[in-house]
Length: 434
Ligand code: IMP
Image 1 (cartoon, rainbow, N blue to C red):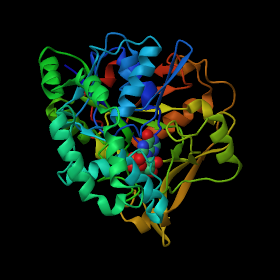
Image 2: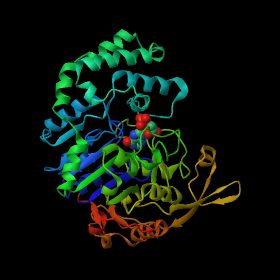
Image 3: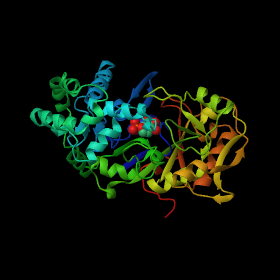
Image 4: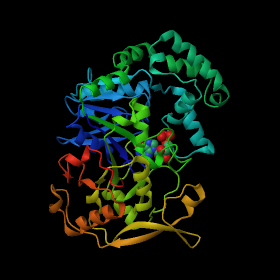
């Protein structure tokens, strides 16, 4: 019973949505294990475009069952809205989506606190969706879980208590009474709606696994935004790395059979924080426009940089990646030369690993290797051999540097624009370093 984790290997927006949708065809279950509606997963198929924030992209594959795991933070309003959007477009959701009773709930005051901090000079460039404050409540053990949300009496008590706990900060936004009214406005209808999806998802997944089901576990953000292993404090408040899949889905590590890391052919980041290979000038502008590098959730222009091998090696290590997917290779067409960071310099000394300290992350200078690049339209390539020689050489050079097979190459937004180099190797553990 294979269980494949698909993680972002960079700072998010790597194209996980497309890949999870692509691989989802061969899966029985797709599970989101962390994050919330801060994520933006774009999926294009049959000429239609879907922007998903909270619901796993497996929902777009008929026959696949989907779980929002206990590690996710769920804004009930966003949940209702996204399901209505999907149903409005003819996607059947009922009976195919299960919401963990243990997931935590994002309420209007979390969004206010996030926005207040961002705009009050303490910002790190969050999506202002209330993600951090909701996880703060979880860790402080005052959070509201879906199970509490469904219990009207318990919910009212918890909300009133929490508003008191956060009163000093929230008073800067509006009177507490007004925030309380906002929380309860339309609550009953949302409560009933959520109740029809809520389940003990840990039990469901365990039962499915015992029956031999094929499972895909998807991270919402990239590894470098991981709370523990990313570029702290410029990170999200949960664990997108593969270990987070066990915590956030409620399954043991022995169940995971393989981990695929998704990387772009270059690097992007939204929000503040270190980014050693960041570019400005005309190449960044070209890649941003050709690659449509604007946030799905916030519309913010993404920062652009060259591929960073030490950063990707860190992602390989912290996730135990068994394979890689490289997306957006088509975007680099016409860029000559293409550079790849193969190490850094700091204070005149060679540094070969992505540093842990904040200062070093900001101060390292990339050492680049150049590749001639390639031209032409790659979007029609369906086999690796269809790619121009320069593109193949680029992929193979990166693969050799990383020591992990790049099994999927994506050359466009739609699902057919995907080259699979070895389908069998994807779902099986093949740790290249063991
Ligand atoms: P938060 O997750 O909204 O708290 O934001 C924390 C950091 O994670 C910020 O730098 C965000 O830009 C970044 N972030 C959160 N979600 C995504 C995503 O889906 N793609 C890219 N960056 C994200």
